[in-house]
Image 1 (cartoon, rainbow, N blue to C red):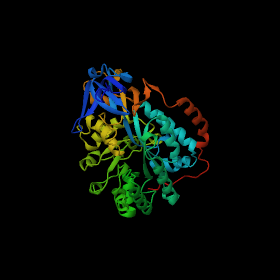
Image 2: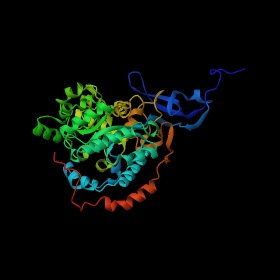
Image 3: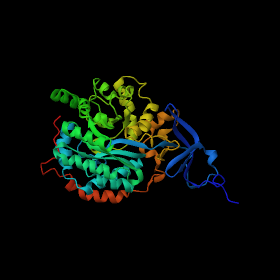
Image 4: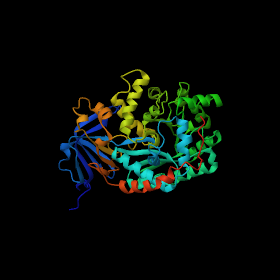
Length: 457
């Protein structure tokens, strides 16, 4: 007798994570928690979230007993400069103009592709250990960053940064990189065009970038309205805000990720609302506090017009950390302070920004950001047995305000385990740090007196 497909047993699952509490989203995108649950993964995607008892006899190539742990969608760092992990602590306690002109841009003129790769590898290790499974990167020598992403197993949204001072070649290099790497690493790498900012990329180059983005179906990742001073300077010089400059250039007719936006004004909100494509904003509050900026990203106002706000860290040279858990807590606290309302942003709202809204911000809302059938299996397990997370009266509040990056026990991307029980499996940190340390004297030298750009806003 020949068996029919219905009679044949299903192939074993690649991975079953069982016995955990799973962060889930309902049909209204509200945060909830499924207790004593199991996650079934096949071909890198979630097949089901089901009671653990239903998977007791389910064949699997690998099974993780996650009793006592919480499973979350992998965290997404919506804006960073991963190679700047090599510059952590190099320029401290400075206003942003001095930070750029006297330290960061002189040092970055020394960068080699190998420096970039080592910094990116160090950053990938840090993010894996902190439960970050996807990051949006905006930097130079991005071929080296892409190599680090491939080897680390992370997911990334990459853009080669450029200034108008580079001429048309900078824009061409950004486009060539985006086209060459789009969809690589088995689909883990997506790409964007990455003009630096309206104050370093002129109107003509911004318009040309918008045209390229439309022609090739690419999104754009750009710093804009980073702080209130930039917006005031833009108004004084050009009579337009940075957001209005983006609109005039046609960039709001393309999918665009605006970074920081603490200088977004009320007059900018209708501009963003009438955008003809997906507009999102990435917020990285630790850096704003460190630079003593007087405002923060207007998350509430942006949400009211349908603009998703994702969480970010910025680079470790300004933020000292690539810890999105910290960004989540600081976003909640900074918003409460800015709004004068302790009821905003709640822990559940913060978790929503860290998951679905962050996924949408990087253009991957249909693939990641939730643990649900059909979504990629980007999952982190969090151990709540530490004294700083006990007792648990409100699980959402514990996750946002008590959990630390070091509580992440396991990190999974596309169903592949990158860290198991705090053991990092894909990056050799010791070798990376050893070689980077040898290269630091040449990298941090500022004696040449040059810089890659001028900050005058």
